[in-house]
Image 1 (cartoon, rainbow, N blue to C red):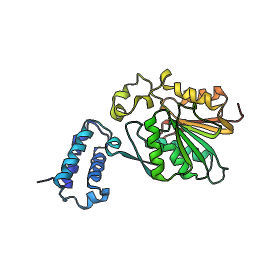
Image 2: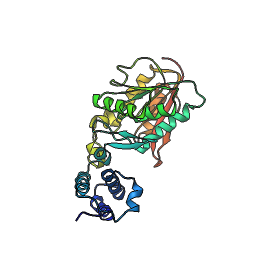
Image 3: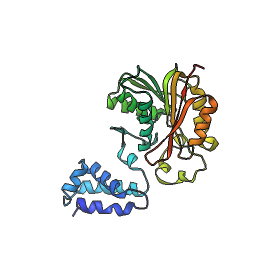
Image 4: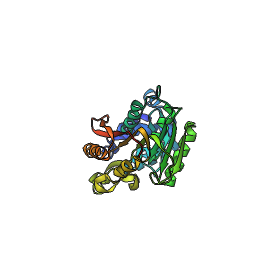
Length: 283
């Protein structure tokens, strides 16, 4: 006889060594297999899974026990107020990256500012660019990524969300990008190649090219900050995500390059996460 929903949910104990939220993970897997909302699990705890549903659930559970991230198993991840398709070609969008979106909207008020031209460097799933495009229909957003698979995925997410004011192209940072921008945003690689966290948790399954950068994780950030001085319109803003311990180094970098109003914004865990600066002149 197949197991009940309650019995399936009790198997969260098998995930305690690989997950900080095993109960949540189990519910995600069950909802995916049953094609039901989370409320269904609580409303019908004694409901029995079919043999096919139990087999599918146990297969997904084994993948999670092996450490594979929930987002890769399910093929999607919630970000901002929508869901994004994800794949192993890209990083998994994380809640702290929403701080970058919030900061952009705060610095360039979408209700009062003139139409803006925005560039999202290293777009991955398209998360940041799509969030800004959806919040600000008058903005023209361009997202780019080095990896063809990431560009294809971002274009797929754009089509699903119906965001007409954003486009995605393949480019190594600014290489294939034309023109100047009022806002440049990025969640670039910023982890030191020797960081021990690379062998732990979800990042073990994510593409290294989207995670690591030389010079203690600052090489790509420095490249972006330097090149952005030639790509920002007067009074334009650069802002980017970085590691919790890189705020001071990022602020010093922007000040040295001549950016003004340099500051670092905290994430939801009160860690340094986004640094920004304004470029006042056209270089």
